[in-house]
Image (cartoon, rainbow, N blue to C red; front, side, top):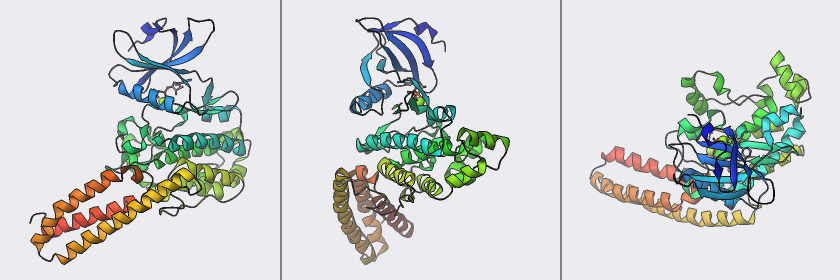
Length: 405
Ligand SMILES: Nc1ncnc2c1ncn2[C@@H]1O[C@H](COP(=O)(O)OP(=O)(O)O)[C@@H](O)[C@H]1O
Ligand SMILES: [Mg+2]
């Protein structure tokens, strides 16, 4: 479709000057202030025809919520176009480059690339502490300004923690940076999807390649590879000393074998945790990823993940999250009590009819728990496990009894 008809048009005090991008689900224009005493360049974003307006309205609300952090574009205005009721947002125009392009153009070495990545982790940490998941982390959505400040953009698919189950249309995902649970069958979505996306960006920054190099494979093999295949350690991803490897290494101010040595050990370990297929084995939040990257920058080994509530899943050093731990511990003990009761009822009610009669109650209660625990489920791998066990008990009883009294 030809969007150039928009150019020169006015929206409020802004005149649309240039179409920045028409891909994805939005139209992005650069615009100039044409009223008032001063000049100002901004970016105007609106949905493409056919894309629901609420996506832009939601993005507006997130940017407003994030306004006091330097890691996100500032929101100047939100409104609807006269005549069409199409919503639009006006935000800060970020003069900069994609993070990978920025790093390559300046020939940043590995420590400088890690510094850049740490800023991205700080942005994600801030976002997660506001209970928002970005869910579309990829280099095109991470800009770096001329003075080296990282800005995270594009909240078109972002989601609040208590709604995290809602998205996951694999057609809309950039598979190279999407976590495996996004293409799984009805799997739980958690903030750690952002940890996976961010770690994929780190992999690219360090090795010049994405973890699974999916775009070089046949389209029909990609989803399966994402679900099943473990990426190679970053230190082995490349650097076999082909001409491409020499070029990648040159951008990082090293020879291929030196680069391999720089990545071996702590960085390989950190990346393996950030890209873990199983939620319980991956850092659960941006805060944990940030802490681990900071440790590696200081020459220490990355933080381990225990896969259990507490260390490795929720950051105990953070007061706000300490409350979350306390709250989920209470919920957890209630859940455990409910469990013992349910399992006891199942094994003591001996007849097949009685066990089958108990099934609807069990199913109902499982649903109730799932609803009650939804906010905690996003960060708490143990609760996810407990509910899975409950599902298994229900399925087993269904199989044994034929599901009917
Ligand atoms: N505030 C901004 N400042 C500068 N460039 C921007 C800004 N917002 C978006 N862009 C550019 O437009 C592209 C698409 O914008 P984005 O918000 O990511 O929309 P989409 O949902 O289409 O991916 C970005 O990758 C970036 O190049
Ligand atoms: Mg985008």
